[in-house]
Amino acid sequence: MKAALGVILIVAATACNAAEAYKWVDEKGITNYGQKPPENVRATPVDTEPRGVIETGGEVAKPREAETRGRPQGPAVQVIPVPVPRAYASAVPVRGMAFDTFIRLERGMTEGELLMRAGRPDHETVESYWDYAVQSFYYFPTVADPYTTVVRLRGGRISEIERVKKF
Figure 1 (cartoon, one colour):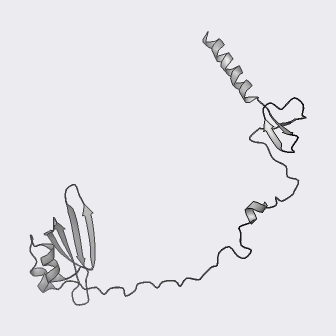
Figure 2: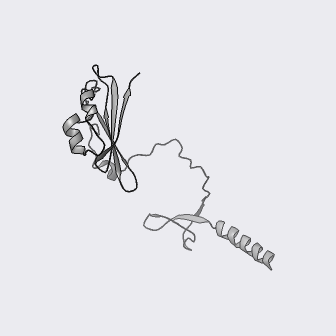
Figure 3: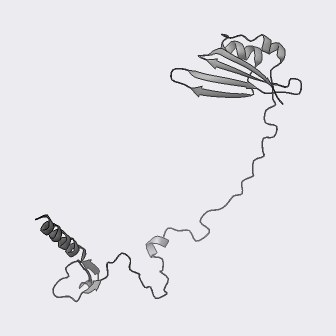
C-alpha cells in the first residue's frame, strides 16, 4: 500500500512539474503568458527551465523613457575632495602620576577624591560585571616618572592600586 502511494505521489509531482507556459498576443497587441491560451489565438510554448539561456542576438537593451525621465544629464554625483585628517601624534600630553600623589592614595577613597588628588587619567576603561562596574584609571609613565599606575574602582571607590615600572 505504501509503495503504491509513493508511486502515485511521484507521478503527481512530475505531472505538476511538467506544466507548460504559453505566450500569445491578444487583439489589443498585448503579450500574455499563461498555462492555458485562449482557443482562437495562436500560442507558442515557452521554455520554463530555470537553467535555460536567453539569446539576445547581441542587442543591448535600450533604457526606457520612464527610467531616464528624472535623471540629470550630467554626472550623477559631484565628488568633493575631503582633506585627510592628520594622525593624532600629539593629541593629549601624558600626565602620569607623581610618586607623592601615589603614596597618598588609599583604598576606599572615592572617585572624586582620586580625581582631586591625581587629576584626569591618561586612559580610562569600564568593565561591567553582574552587579557592579569596575573602572580602571591608567596613568602612563613620563620622563620624570617611569612608572605606570593603574587605579581600579569598584562601586565608585578605590579597590586596587598598582604601580609598575616600564622596561
